[in-house]
Image (cartoon, rainbow, N blue to C red; front, side, top):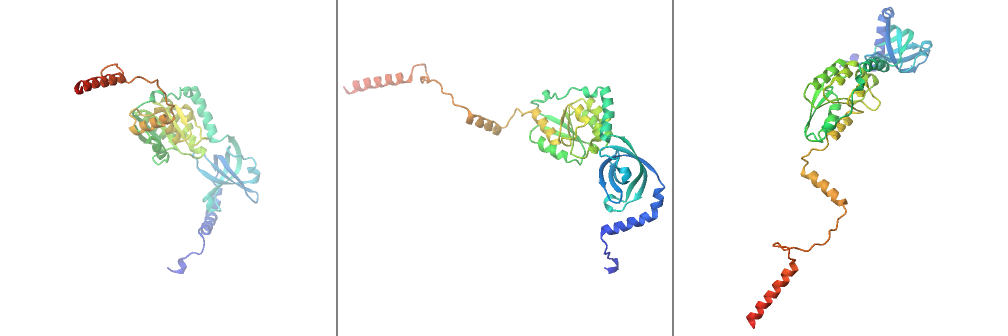
Length: 330
């Protein structure tokens, strides 16, 4: 290979050089295009030379870095939403992508997207009495020999494996996966409806952990309405301990992880009746090891033919043999 084809620049330096070239070509054009966007502040990095670099995201979860003048940045707070008016410009580093936003005006909008969405959804749900559903009644599951679980989640979710590892501990449980897009409330609602009409015994909605924005869909009216209207019990196992959603609040039972959701179902089902002999022996042996022996009062040993004590029978037999002996030899 010719040495002229080999670059001595690092990838990072080459990227920066090309960004600079693009900035020189389209910079003026980008400045003429004004945008007004609503975004939530995730992180504020106080930079140098009077400029702060602020990471924001919109309601769909799309993130971008903003280059904010210091006199504007002092009003910003994390987990608050703002209306930013300004223009895009070509970035200076590959770390933050090719474009960044430079606002000229900032106006407070409200709380975090999740808080605002929950407030709006809660009002509608309270008015519709969706949150008044009777919960946590799984008494009919105790002792069921067979149980068909409708698992509503993404087809690529690691939560499927977590749930399967728990469910396989008890015979008689089968599951079907109803694949949905976990970032799309309409897709999740459709999956819940399909699972409800499938003839399964219980619906289990699960997903792994993530950022707060990943769980906004579970605060949507569409998802909550389908859970409320579901004809069979619904168990949720969404994220981790901090991810309490409106879907959790309207479900028949909510757990903090997919694994705990599956374990809850196992606990409600209990052991199957046709327990294996190994399990029976194990339980009996364990109990016997700690059971205090009971002493019964001594009873006379009985003859198979009646109620005469054995020692009397033996004595009579000896006497008869003695008489026969004496008559024979005398």
